[in-house]
Image (cartoon, rainbow, N blue to C red; front, top):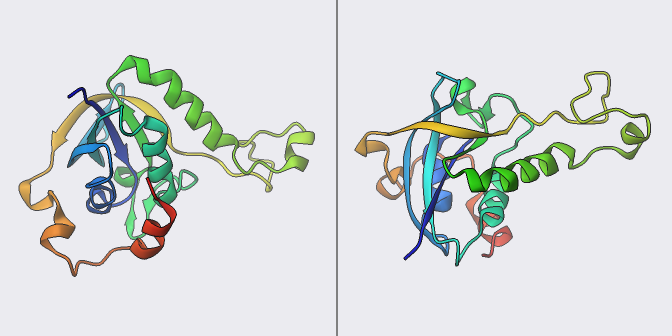
Length: 175
């Protein structure tokens, strides 16, 4: 079976792993620490191995950004700080154009028509009508797997606190 890997970050990696584990087309997930090229700061994230014949990259990113906001610079829920920032990390150069197109879509989603007419961009600090997108698509330099105690955390600790409304999430995401 042909598979590919993509890496996601944004908030608590336990929650991210629980979201992607078991989705149709997802073969496996692992929690770990991501480092991008030219960036020595580790970010908490997950590795998603998937079958691109059963689920495409856009669907996976739709799921990621259904639970992770790309408009916050420093994490989600109580997982706050540089190590919890939202992003997509890739190793396959053929994924880069698709990822950059998707990130451009995120950066311009919700742009106010008045701001566009005034010539302001989504990142213009003078505009209160637009949001800044902090999520990035970055080439992955290293993935360091987290300790076993962090793998499949919610399966091992079903009563653990989560900031995701799982019922609502499952109703919204029907892949």
